[in-house]
Length: 310
Image (cartoon, rainbow, N blue to C red; front, side):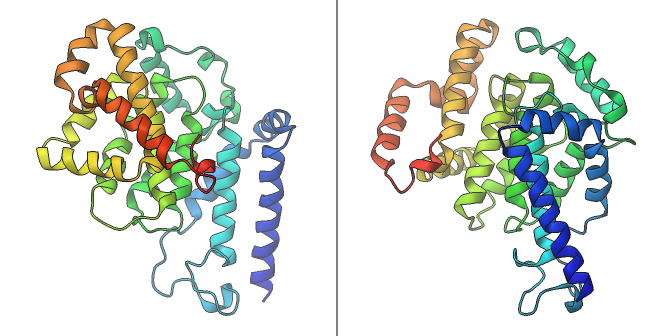
């Protein structure tokens, strides 16, 4: 029972930290926990978590009576979810989010940024290296690797997607997008969406939202998607999934439309590719398709799902 009590206490403590990162003083809290080396600490904790439920590895004495290992009420699951909530809140529109990288990973991001052209961001040279993750693999990359190993129906997949999505939110960061593209995030998400398994609305929405942030204004992402959706069958399947769950995919649809016009108007060297070569962009660039999506969204939006449409 003492183990359960200890876990419950830790869940409550991490929950309070998460609330502080969500409150009106969140900027100040982000700064304070950054200076307290929260992120390298969470990176070490994350590495020691056992994410998959593996048989009877977690004994009954570690759980509340009547709860199985994957139950969200179970303390060992709850502590992981609360940790993911904290990471999500920490990096959401945060100037400290690059602390989730190691020094070598930051150097990689800086090299990408130097070639980002219109999408180059400022401030990478101001990241406090003393408060970054240690070793070769940072917290962000660790989350990506665990996400790629988790089954679709995992309790944690939603939160992994939300954290990566949160990391990308804000001003479009081409260098951060490419960093994640190099680690196979796009191929994994699209592959999971098309694997034929039944998915909850939460998983669908978090997956499409992540794709929206990952691909926005990034021609390299659309080239990768073109390679993943290499057959007529796969393209049809992805299109039907997007259209069938339009409330969940609306962020992705809007991101793709904005990207299409960005490539045509701001990066004219990609205009022909967007209009005539890339399936995803050429499909969304069709004016009638845009009108159809608008009509569907307006028709489907009710008081019951309005909270999902952002």
